[in-house]
Image (cartoon, rainbow, N blue to C red; front, side, top):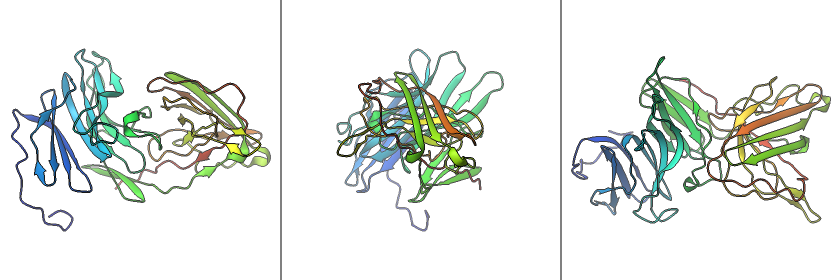
Length: 358
């Protein structure tokens, strides 16, 4: 029985040519499904269309070893892969088995890096899980075999407006847990869960946003390939931020989109998301992954992450509130336009996902 439903009879999908190491699968709304599995360092895919399974086929990528697979359907069959390359470097990658959205049907995209560890570092990655409760979210285990060895789950997520093919991921952050096989992700319309055999954590997906546009007195960004900083100053006259609202805390994500006031209207566009590490009373610092597309004049907006991001502006009881961040970027990037200074800034913040263990 599965949630009160009786399972059908088992069906042979195919006969593997060797020992299967890892496997993952997902199903489209119309019943079509994809199964991916690894034999040694090769990943195979087999697809079910209109109720019939096809023949397994090897992927067109290469790796020296595979230590985990995950699959989630959204337009294409989006996959997460952990393993090593020929040089012995450990990776968490993403790849796409196409269904015609971002990748041609029945073809594999190249492997794209999420994070890596150099050969000889005693670090490897394994057991990824992938889902999209609100934005794309990825968990995997970082395994260290040196002195004080550990198996620690890490969590990352993409910007709210990014598609999977963009491969834009926040710098992965650790979860305070030891786990050999990671954290599975599940969700409903209002909440998300991550689970292990010994624990369940949940968080709301409907946390309110905080718009502090009217309080922004300064927004400074230094955006460059593989790095950057962001600093936001909020007015605090009268002590309006003497008691911080719940959205401004460690764990929030700030989205900054500069813009202009024109004769006809305020012109805005989405900018990069910034995750910072701070709590009230200390100057925040952060890391972020931002879009590889050039920014355009727009507005500055920010909202809180829904799980794992670590930042939030702080407020001084006497003058201003600050948010500063450092960043790392995935892929190439262009700096913000400098032809004219931004004239309008808006920020939205929402609380990070609370952790509740059952």
